[in-house]
Length: 210
Image (cartoon, rainbow, N blue to C red):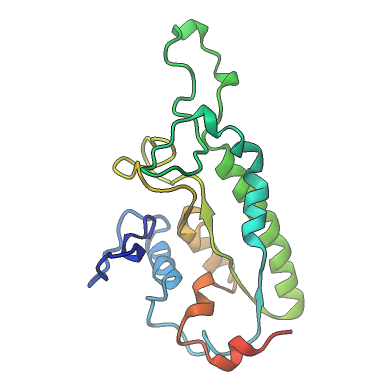
């Protein structure tokens, strides 16, 4: 659900799925299955009833949000086996300086690109939900992109231990960014980005646009 190993070239298809180490309890686990089209007990009408709102240009929104940090890539060491964007400094402060000489205010914030991207995403979702509400439609969420993992313990270059070579950014699960329980509690109608590729969605719905 994070590294998407099963989608890599030559990787064998999974024969079972074990949902663990997630967020949002059972609500988060259900959303992870939904995001991949593996939740098979949706209520009637989930795929073929109603009208929907689709968001486009989200990749450009993410790129614009993190653009100020891209120029800092030469100040950190990529952990990826192949050259790719490196958004975070290896150290928050210079470890070679004595403790009393370190200035944490001058250090780069490794979470800054992640926070900038999510702030832009939330502004966009606010407007998209307003449009969906006013037009009586259901919002289909865009693909969620993360520049940092979410975890309970220390991260190395915004990755969990053992995932040092995972490329950044990555397609991240819904529960990395939101609390699924409250979305259900507040009855927030939505579909995930995989909705458009799910074979259970009728062809006539996909072909119907305004």
